[in-house]
Length: 301
Image (cartoon, rainbow, N blue to C red; front, side, top):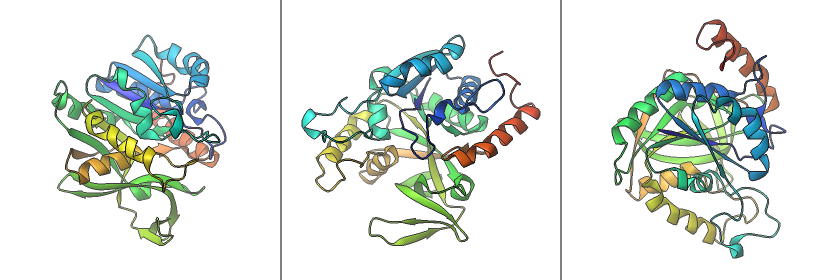
C-alpha cells in the first residue's frame, strides 16, 4: 500500500516550511510520526508530493533517514504540470490545489493508496483504520469505493486564526456531501465561517469534518480528472488564487453518484500546526505520547 503525502503547500500562514519544522529534541517532524504510524499499519511505500525546488531539503531531512524503513518516491507539483499554457495566468504563483497535487503523482498510483497532509498529526488508529479499508479494495480496478477519516470540527480548531476544513454531511457511516470551507473560526457556538454569499454560517463543535486523510483506488482519476478540467475552464474562478480542492472533487463525485465514501471513525486525536502559535501545544502533546510509551524516544534509532 502507498501513502501519498501532500507537502507542496507554501505554508504562508505558518511562516515557512512547517512540514520540516522539528517537534522533538531529535529533530523529528510531524511527518516522521505519520510515516511510523503508516509503517505500523502495513504501508510499504510513501510518495511525497513537493515543489521541485524543495527536493534537496526534503530528501536530506526526511527521505534519507526513512529510506531504510519504507520505499520513498517523489512527485513534483508545478503550475505547468498537466495544465495547458494558455490556462496559466502570468502572475499566478499559487499551486492548483490538493486534487491537482495527487494528479501530479498519478504515475506512482497503480493500486490502493491513502492521502494525508504533511503537517497534520492523525494518530496511529487512523492509519490502522484506513489500511484495513484499503486491503478490502486493493486490486479492484473499477471499485469506486473510497474512505475518509472523520474528525469532530471542535477538536480541529485553533485559537490563532482561521482554518480550512472539509465540512461533511454523513448518514449511516457514508459521506453524503462535503464542501471545503477555507476560513473557519473558533466560536462560542462551536465554529463559524463565511459562505460564498458573504453570509456568516455557524456550525456545532461536533460537526464531522475531513482533515484530508483519504483512502482511494486509482479509478478516482477516471472521473475526477474531468472536474479539474472544468475547474480550469470556469470563467468565474479567481485566476490567481482559486484552487481545486480534493474534498470538493470528492463531493462532486458523490453528487454525480460516481463513488461511495465510507466515513471511518477513529479514536485517534488530531493535532496540527496551521500557525506558529500552534507549535508549542503540538510539541507538548507529542512529548506526552513519547513519555506514555506510544512512540520511542528517537523514532528511527
